[in-house]
Amino acid sequence: MVASLAPGTARPRIAVAPSALTAVVVSPNGRPSIGLQRLLLDLGAHVTHVSHPAEAGEELERARVDLVFLVVGRGWESQLRKFRLIRELCDTPIVVIGDQGTVEQRIMYFDVGADDVLQLDPYPAPETGLRLRALVRLYRRDSSASVIPGPAGLVLDIAGRTAFVNGVEVALTAGEYELLALLLERRGRAVPVSAIAAHVSGTDLDGRRNHLEALVSRLRVKLRAAGADDVVRTVRRIGYRIG
Image (cartoon, rainbow, N blue to C red; front, side):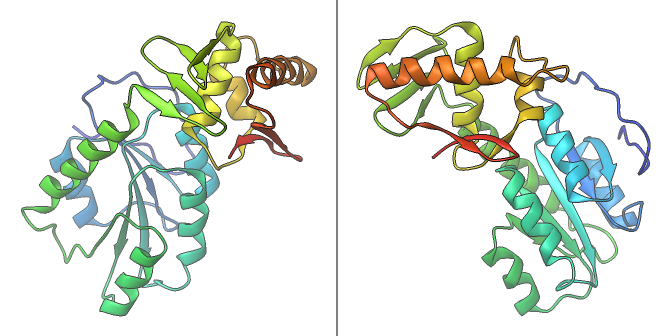
């Protein structure tokens, strides 16, 4: 059964089994087409419906998401900006759903980072669900790597919850490790303060940003002492990033 929420409905956190497929559907016109609903049903996905990329970003911060569907309808060119906004927010596979698109229009989305472009006229082809499941398997395999490399000789050992710089272990507290892991997982992208507060122990800001700033400062000092200087950078009015 597909668990879905109408646009505008409050979205509680739902615990799903690790093997369950989770998806966010970004559709400016409300409910997806019958073809997309059938596809989601075939996938057995737990689905959240939103109408704007910012809402998709909130879902991506709250929990693991395997697939993001962007419904463009016939507005291939007009929805391109929304696609770019979502792509900036995540590395999650993005599948574009459109109607009556030309080859050039479909290629346009692949060129800017789409993982697949589908036309469900009116129902998905039998192999569509299998293709998307294969896409999710690849994404999960890549995102479950046991080691995450970083700049300046920095390496994070996920299994051991430890960090190394040029092969030497850096002693980190739980909060420092979680902060470093979050920034490395989203390397190259600015991670908002709100996302850090939601993921990192001891940073429930409650209006007191100085707690997070102190945590970042301690992490920087330890990395600098180990030889990894200027790794964690401040992104003004947003948060922090690595790389």
